[in-house]
Image: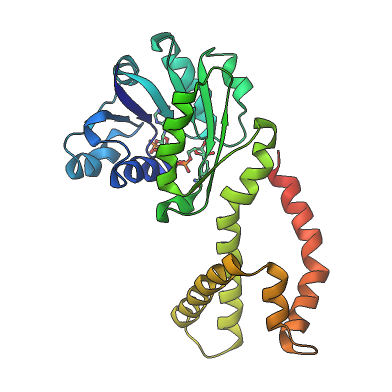
Length: 257
Ligand SMILES: NC(=O)c1ccc[n+]([C@@H]2O[C@H](COP(=O)([O-])OP(=O)(O)OC[C@H]3O[C@@H](n4cnc5c(N)ncnc54)[C@H](OP(=O)(O)O)[C@@H]3O)[C@@H](O)[C@H]2O)c1
C-alpha cells in the first residue's frame, strides 16, 4: 500500500509521470503506471526499468493509496467505478479531468479527492496547476500535492466552483495562443516572400521575448511602448479592439460549460 498509482498515459499522464521523476519528487520504484494501450508504456519501462507497469487496474489499486486518474474525461467515471471496490478507506484519488466536479466523483467514492487541472506548459516547469481538494483531504495530502506539482510550474488552490473559468485561463490558453500564432504566421507567409519556417522562427523568438517582458511590465505598458501614435501597430490594435471582444465572448461562452 505504499506505491503511487497513475492511470492514463496520454498527453497529461506522460507529462506528470516524467515530470515527477525528473524532478526527483517520486522515485520510479515507487510508481505503478497503467493505461489502456499498454504498449504505450514500453518506452517508459526502458527508460526507468524500476517502474511497475500493469495492465490490470485492480493490481495497481491494491498496492496504492494515492492514485492519479489522467484518463479521457468521458472515461473518468467508468474507471472510478471499475476500481472503487478495491480502494482502501484512506485512498486519495487525484484526477485531472476538466468539466467534472469533485461532487460528481463523491457520489461514487466517499474518500479523499483532489481535482487538479495541470497545463501543458508544465512540460517546461511553467504555468499554473489549479488545485481543489474535498474536505476529506488532510494537511499531509495537501503538502504532497503542493510539493509534487511544484515541479510542473506554480500551484494555485481555488474553490471547485471557479475551476471551469480558471481552466480556460491557465490550461486552454496555451492552445489559444498557439492557434493565434499559427494563423498569424499563415497570413504573414501569404503576404510576403518569407518561408513558413522563417516566419515560425521569428514568431517563436518574439513570443519568448514578449513573455519575458510581460513578467516585468503590465499589458498596457508593453502595448503603449510599441504602439506609437498614428503608427502601424496602433492601426492593427484598432482592428483587434473592434473584433476581438465579440470573439472572446463567444469563446468563453463555448468553453465555460
Ligand atoms: N491536455 C491538456 O492540456 C489537459 C490539461 C488539463 C486537463 N486535462 C485533462 O486530463 C485528462 C487527460 O487528458 P489528455 O490530454 O492527457 O488525454 P489523452 O492524451 O487522450 O490521454 C488519455 C489517456 O488515458 C487513457 N485511457 C482512456 N481510457 C482509459 C481507460 N478506461 N483505462 C485506462 N486508460 C485509459 C488513454 O489510453 P489510449 O492511449 O489507449 O487511448 C490515454 O493514454 C482529460 O480528462 C483532460 O480533460 C488535459
